[in-house]
Amino acid sequence: MSVTASTHDEGSTAVVLSGVGKTFANGTEALAPLDLAIAAGSFTAIVGPSGCGKSTLLRVIACLAAPTSGRVERRAAASPQNTGFVFQDATLMPWATAAENVALPLRLAGEAGTDIEPRVAEALKRVGLSGFGSAYPRELSGGMRMRVSIARAIVTAPRLLLMDEPFAALDEFTRFKLNDDLLALWQQNRWTVVFVTHSIREAVFLSERVIVMSPRPGRIVEDLVVELPARRDSALRLGHAFADQCARVSQAVSLAMGEDVPERAAS
Amino acid sequence: MRNVGSLARAGLPVAFGLMVLAMWELAVRVNHIPAYIVPGPLAVAEALWSSAPELIEALGVTLEITIAALLLAAITGAGIAFLLAQSRLVEQTLFPYAVFLQVTPIVTIAPFVIIWIENIFVVMLILAWMAAVFPVISNTLLGLKSADPNLKELFRLYGASRRQTLLRLLAPSALPYFLGGLRISGGLALIGTVVAEMVAGTSGTGSGLASRLLEASYRLELARALACFVLLSAAGFLLYLTLDALSQRLLRHWHESARSAEP
Ligand SMILES: Nc1ncnc2c1ncn2[C@@H]1O[C@H](COP(=O)(O)OP(=O)(O)O)[C@@H](O)[C@H]1O
Ligand SMILES: [Mg+2]
Image 1 (tube, chains in turn brown, cyan):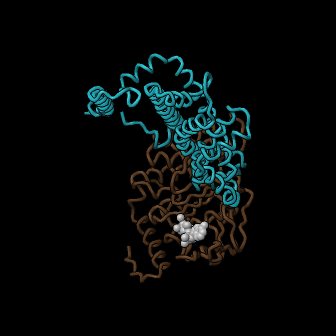
Image 2 (cartoon, each protein chain N blue to C red; image 1 turned 90 degrees about the vertical axis):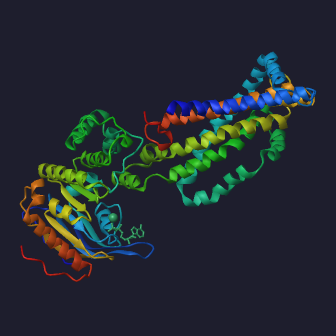
Image 3 (cartoon, chains in turn yellow, green; image 1 turned 60 degrees about the vertical axis):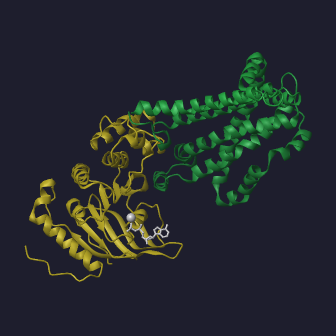
């Protein structure tokens, strides 16, 4: 509701939304005017009930949808050209090989063919798909397709990575593995990531900051800093600290939904 | 199990066909039906055999027009679909005329075309094209409109030009639909050519197989007429198989319609 403080006090800001609201042509108010600042290099998760405007918010940040009120400010570091977007479905071109799918952003930018190949190979390697470049999407599993989708988003070396429930359609084993790998990649590259999810555990595990949205029209009702060590690995999921943080976010979500919240048991 | 299944798939229709032919031959012989009323299959086969070179040449003429019309329908149909896809307004304005083209029996247009255009080859081409183009237009239009909206957003995000979006997204998305339309158009182009030949009244050397069929039937050479019919049907069937194979080949890596049975 108010301008939220960045968790990276020292860092610069990648995206600033001021009074951004979105009402669709049919009168649906998806976003109530909201303010949000996202620090460069941070990992932010957005959680909220289905239909609350999370995708709309992400599309506004990506400049794929124009807000009906307010202003979206994207600092130089995050201009539209170096934004990566990952959808809930892998959204691959079924007629193209994995490598051609990953190459798409480079081809659309009109880059020379010779420069493209090594960059595509590198992106595929980073998502653990070396050797699968010539496979067609239908020959790949759901998790592998999502990896291709991520490779395509990072092949341009984006500064801003927007992910809209990217792992929601995957089974839990695959999701955990992809969570681990995404986190490792982020720790190496420090893109600014905005990650929409409906899984509280996923939000807590991945991010430094969790933003909770209210049912439609979407407002920011809670903005939490995840109190977990910066370096995380899969062992973290087993600990008390992780469970505590999940409970905290869970409580905030329940409040946002207007439910009665039981007192949280002391840990 | 699988081999028995595939054997049955190929064998059963053939066995059925042979049985029907045998019964036909038998009925003609037992009842002493004269060949100018109903010739038996053996008489048809003989007519086919004895005038094979001549009939195959005539088939060549018919197929030439059919294939030319089909190619023309493929190109113009895809082009028209692309134009219609440009805006909702253009589509609403022009699509009814495409439907008009489809529902009008071409036999009723033929006399005008014959009067207005002198070259008989062009006349037949136009009539066959008119019969064949609609499925390409409507299917391709549907294909252009069913491109994945998320992929469209992605193309926008990366600042794709109209040309890039057309070539890299819309055209491949529409390809399976286009090919489906083309398979239907193949048969229609043949029908259109046959109708055109019959209406245009071409005859003698250099005329197509449908003209020969008509000629033979006027002379009550029914075995010969049926031989023409058999060749035309076979050509139509072959055309379909060819277009189907083309479709399978172009789509084999990615489209569900071309998914081969698991090995
Ligand atoms: N193009 C659109 N036109 C009208 N309403 C829309 C459109 N896109 C989304 N909405 C509506 O806006 C609301 C928010 O949608 P969305 O951002 O997709 O929610 P979420 O991603 O949180 O599930 C929903 O009620 C949805 O029905
Ligand atoms: Mg959504």
